[in-house]
Image 1 (cartoon, rainbow, N blue to C red):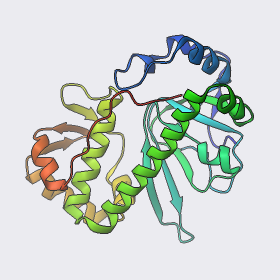
Image 2 (image 1 turned 90 degrees about the vertical axis):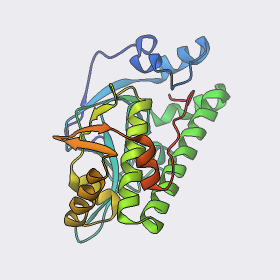
Image 3 (image 1 turned 180 degrees about the horizontal axis):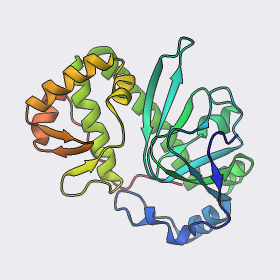
Image 4 (image 1 turned 180 degrees about the vertical axis):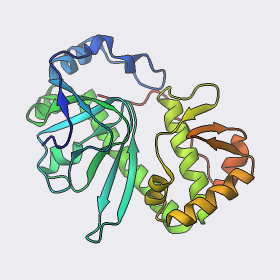
Length: 252
């Protein structure tokens, strides 16, 4: 189910020219895998910032790979409070839960202008039956989502406000680095302090005060949404854990 300002396109990026394939952090397809993914992809979807293209409780006929842009997964409570579960960056897959369970248990919103590769749920069995290597890749992606949720649970449940803020910013920086979005140690993060607060389970005021403490450490600089990593070791020490980059990770 496509909701909001999603706009399918008549022309789209050919898989053999996909810019994601140039990323050293992503594994290469074999010629047969590339040919299958090319016919598996049915369209591209452009989504405006602020639009939820997948909603909790809705049936999902498609799954998506982020070609460009940022999105986030979230759940809403009855009183309007929001918990952001995690973020989706280029090469990440979204909608797999809805494709396999037939109903979304969370929503997904575009944080920036978003371009998605669209794959039909109806052809998912062909992928599993004909290409075990790609089936393993989807299993890996699902396991990684579980790992991200585990990390977020530890962050919320056991780290202090300063530690959890440092860990989240380190985590998002490393993922952006893997996606080729970091240039000379800097990146323009698209999220606001309210997004951070909704991810960290903290009030906006508490988040603001905690960020000021973190900025005072001189481990990072963050002004006008431009984030700069100044002292990676110091940020890791504050977070109490290191987020290690991955190489050769799969994508569809």
